[in-house]
Image 1 (cartoon, rainbow over the protein chains, first blue to last red):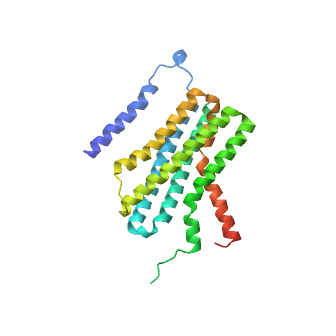
Image 2: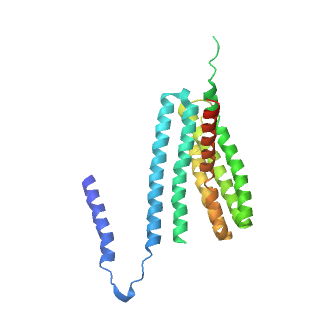
Image 3: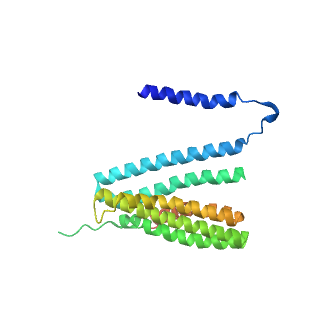
Length: 102
Length: 140
């Protein structure tokens, strides 16, 4: 079942790339705004990786809290600062995108 | 048997969570005043708006983590998961609404708003410098 699903998704991915490859070129084609496309991809990558980082940090902190509830103040402070820094990384990407796309 | 008294350094570093918001308030006033003098009223208003959103964001993040920790350690009144998650996601909604409002009302002050969103980083940096100073000067 899993291999069938993976084949279906692979075929769909190939089809997504096949449509622009077979499209008519020449005078009807327009200039592609690669900066906007790159900005969208970079924001998506930054958000995804920051989300993963926040999830890992929160999971590790909660595991530590469950094992040692007496260490709550230190773990809580570290988690707050860590999450604030991880969020700011996504904001850095947003600012760079605004500066470059505008 | 006497109760265990936390050491001086532990109480000092434990108070960082209360010092960081104070640093943030001080820095937001300082930066807004400086932006008003250097770039004008619109940018300063955008910066003040960004600082307010960043402060609320940090405050709600603190609250959400405290509630999550209460739930994990089962101390005090354990809040429901829905309310914890709701507050956590409400922060992003507020930031998006603030950004949209600034973008549609006054696009010129957008850079001020974006700069204001970095207030927690500046507050944490100030706290780090203060802790370094106290560690070197007082040996805490």
